[in-house]
Amino acid sequence: MVRLNSAGKPGTSCYPKSICGGDSQGRPTGLLPGPMESVKFCPFGSKDPQDKLKGDCLAGLPEDSARSGREQRYSGLLMLKGCGTETKWGEPDRTFGPTLVRSALFVTGGVMSKIIQDPINGPIKVDGLIEELIDSPEFQRLRYIKQLGLLNLVFPGANHTRFDHSLGTYYIASLIGDYFHIENRETLLSAALLHDIGHPPMSHSLEDLFLKEYGKDHQGVGGSIISGRGEYSGSSIPAILEKYSADPSLVGQVVEKGSKRLPLISSIISGSIDADELDYLRRDAFFTGVAIGLVDHMRIINTVRIVGGEFVIEEKGIPSAESLLISRVLMYNSVYFHKTGRIAQNMLGIALSLAEQKPVDPFEMNDWEFIEFLRHQDGSSRIIDDILKRRLFKRVAQYNFSNARLDELNHVLENADRSTFIVDVIPPLSFSGKDRIKSEIKAIRGGNIGQLESFSPLVRSLSETLETRNIIISARQDSVGGIEHLLRQIS
Image (cartoon, rainbow, N blue to C red; front, side, top):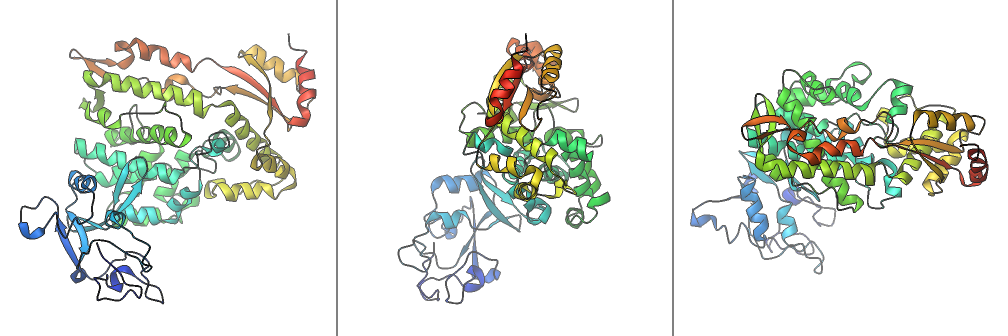
């Protein structure tokens, strides 16, 4: 570690400014690439006593961090000459200990790498292609799109973003790719990182409305952004991919609908057990504060094998696969289909329908650009204001779903102001429980390969759980009485 004096000058083991960077008063502003002669390379696992692994190189570095570096096969840490025992950044009372070392640059195979600290997966190493994709404006937009849309109105901690989740998906895909020695690594990692690049504002909240209004979904838009097709020909992504000899069209195919040329990679991105889900279930559970999306992703990865070009769960991994499916169902029931969250999402849909003008292309907007667009229009401003101040519609009634009952409700309410009430079916009619929980996972038991549900009575019952639907009626607070009066006609 390194001590800096208040002037940021050499003489007390100061980092050279070419490495640290500095402001006009000499205070360092952060680690920046500098001349290689200014740094010392400390290899992990070296048997040469001159490397002083327990001395200069890892001074102050917690053992778990050192171990993590070795396990993740980093070649070593780039440390500056003259390691002290602590780091003081300008002011004598500000001490930056091992944190600075942990955020140092790593070198893998002679390539400079950066470490991004993720609260779910820990340190994530990025370099070259992935680093440039992350820095692209298309990917940076995801910083401002919440992973769960308006569910932070129900779960206050749910402010994580598509940016966070995309990094996590990249990390999980890298683990799977390393474990199975997947070829076309650039395609795999690029597709994993960019799988949500086409997401519109508010994530899945308005996807059905956007599909109806614009004829687009996020997979199709993502494929176009990655390959630079059509109206997204100005995307910066294709040039970055080509710079590193990755095929934009192939990466776009994997993201959009899967590639027949690369079935394993397509399965890792979107399959019965995929990197996307192994990240978002854990991430969503963590940030919503529920303890039902806990998945042992490493156990699952380590008990999967490839048979006939497909991923199959070994018998010893069946309990972990069952746990994954249970987590899927519970997260849908408790989080994704939370009744209050659905009310907020439907209110946003009403706001979009009331807007005099529609966005030219919402798929190029982030959450706040979209909200501000609607907030400044007369037709939608009131309901947007209600959402922002959490003046949500109140639940009025609930019915068991049937097509006949839904038709009856729509008939009774046909003359009411459609902007003052919501008729919601949960789960939505477009939702297939069997498809969404992906119960078609294959497993092997006693030498026989079959659907996991054929080996597990628990799995057989799971998809049925999400096929039970309810009709929820909610209304604006000043319209509750009128809607209740109309509903009295229901037998």
